[in-house]
Image 1 (cartoon, rainbow, N blue to C red):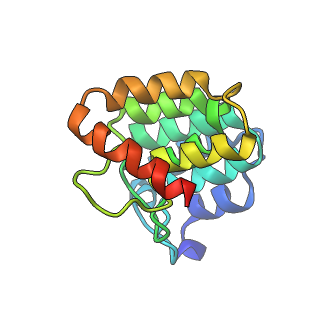
Image 2 (image 1 turned 180 degrees about the vertical axis):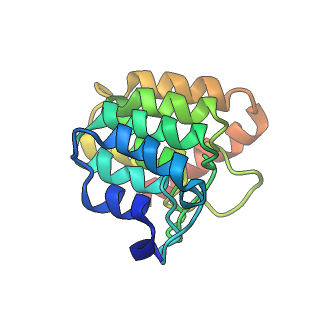
Image 3 (image 1 turned 135 degrees about the vertical axis):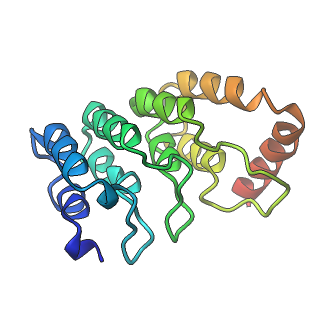
Amino acid sequence: TSSDNILHLVLSKHPTLNSLPSLVRVLVSAHPGDNLTTDDHGDTGLTMVRHILDAGLLERAKEVAETLLEHGADPKHRNMCGWSLLAYSLSHLDGSIELTRTLLNHDAYVLPASNVAIASSSPFRVFLSSVVRSQSLTNAGETLALLGEVMGRFPARMKAHVPACLLAEAR
């Protein structure tokens, strides 16, 4: 359980610690298995980086995520709600563009592997939902360009996924 996992405890309860990136590096070096352990909600240390994002510490979130990825964290991991760190990052639009870029460089999934139902946790749908909530593309242009570049590598999947997300979000 996460109560036995110091990494999970630190990330969930103390995301604003100034020394958090260094502390995480020490913790994953001393206890590498903690980086891959899931808690009762299916969160790993990587998906718990969302607590740092929610605290508005976007650069720190990127630093911690990079450390976890360097120590074997799975960028494709989704918690029990179906959310990956990429989805959480995309909800912050351009504010977390560097974290989004880092996750995509580590092969995080933007597009589903096949034609599955478009879950509300689909990274692209999360992005669309965030744009709708902000009612502007002002803080989303870089992220949209990056997603377009990455998704454009799989034109058939992109062609199926984008309209499905738009329709699902419109509902």
